[in-house]
Length: 293
Image (cartoon, rainbow, N blue to C red):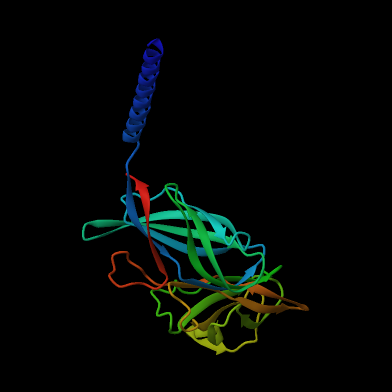
């Protein structure tokens, strides 16, 4: 009889402890912020055609949109495949777009990357850590030629603004201002690219008196202190650009007995995308992730 009472008492104690544990768990769940799902869009579909110096990073653009009311303060990126390139630094800025009373957050990333070797049509992506979620997202394809010890004989800047909303299958005029800041003549021999996009109409424009300008083909010698404009037509290879193109060529130069490559500023051609557009956009990856509310 005594053994039965002790067994019943032990069972009651176990039941009470279980009830307390379940109650504590339920209370903790109530205290946690509830999660809801938010729609995301990632701008993959980029193509890179770049001559890069092994010691200088290349800046890539990467955009993410979300229908969530708030966007992450930070987005950490790691290279995919690991070891194929290095993420040196990334800068995140936010924008808000409103359409039909619905707001969309744009997370715009400027990602500085460094490639250890040359690639031909290599697929790359990023492991994106947003805090509430972590996901591998594609970026696009990279063709690059890595050179070591590029020269820095010319001061180079864009002679006009950025290429605006492009028709990426058509020709885009690129104009660069060149200034020879050295004490020796610099001979411009040609324009070199890593891939096979169309380059045509390469000219050097030298300003003359009374506003006139003289157009000359390469090769061309730029005297010390002289300024000229280099222009060319860029026509992306048909069918290869879904969302954007990063095109970074190099000038082939000679000065005295020395010869080298000078990397030009990148030309960025980017299609516009709006999360509320009804038609599908090539290269856009759509997914859903839980975010705290």
